[in-house]
Amino acid sequence: MAFQVPEYVCPNFSDEKFQNAQDVKLGKVEKDGVAPDDFYLTTYMPTYYKKDGEWILPEHTSLNCVAVVEGDDVVIKEIRDLKAGDQVVLRGNDDAESGIYVNAEGFPEEVYSKAGKSVETSFSNDYDKLFELMEHERDSEDGYIVWVLGPSVVFDYDTRNALNKLAENGYINSLLAGNAMCTHDLEGGFLQTALGQNIYTQVNQPMGHYNHLDLLNEVRDAGSIKEFIAGGNVKDGIIKTLSDMDVPFVLSGSIRDDGPLPEVHGDTDDALNATKKELDKATMVICIATMLHSLSVANITSSYKKRTDGTVSPVYMYSIDVTENVVHKVGAAREYMGFVPMVTNVQDFVVNCEKALVSPAQGVLSEDMEIPETEHVQITGNKAQSKEEL
Image (cartoon, rainbow, N blue to C red):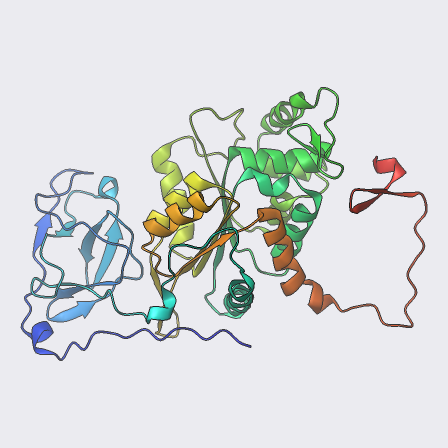
């Protein structure tokens, strides 16, 4: 079944309250990075601003920012990005009278989820809708699927393989992560370990605690991740795949990053700018096993996206974590609008996505097809592995 985009209901601006509303009041920025007194603080919900008698919906919005009138348009800016001379929308009630209207009921009730899902919940219906949505966005002219990944997704062979296939088939348009996730993925492709643990057998390697630091050292010596990969050092992994495909990834730093990798944004403002550049394009966001990144993204990402066909669609955000507390914190930050929590093992989640979206398209073995023999194979857990790899 194809995904049905929920219908967005635009306010009826012919109503008396909209016709009688005044234009927004504006304040001029006198100093870079300083908003004028009584500035209007934005919400992440669809918000209209009246200028010269016309109601304008910005391309996207973001929480705790300011609205700036630029020509015939309204753009949303962080306060620190304001420049002297900018015309900022001033405070007023958001029920239209002062030229500001938050369309909190623009999307139908079905777009909102409810708190209370737990690890015991069946997520079968959520998976079905997720797969339909991912196919829809992959095939849409302006679809843009952003993944937010924590390190745990790259500690497992099957998960890394599934991520690669999803990327190769167009289901990952951008990746947001931190230094650790990228470091351990590259470590896996370079030394076949993550934090010194073999990504296939899950066995700790002798002196393995050096591995991620050796990897960091090698990449920093090469000058960049791309140069390190170009040298043939990385055999596989999601970062290699995205780098080879020129799919953007943004790595945001933290106080105690090992290394870090050359591409990590150590400056907070710089990291936020790079992150927002990707999220402003997002039509769907999938957050996996990272509470801090997920909460940040939940606050930054707009609740809606103006599409190239003139429609307005919700920006769905999925939060996947094995801990109920994490997904519900993220949901609360979005007020559960366009939000889907899934309390499950994150490795299983990624593999399920690949099996549903990629594997069926590759066909199945027919009865008359021969299966090649594999020599010297040993079973480790539920995985087959050659002796040379053990």
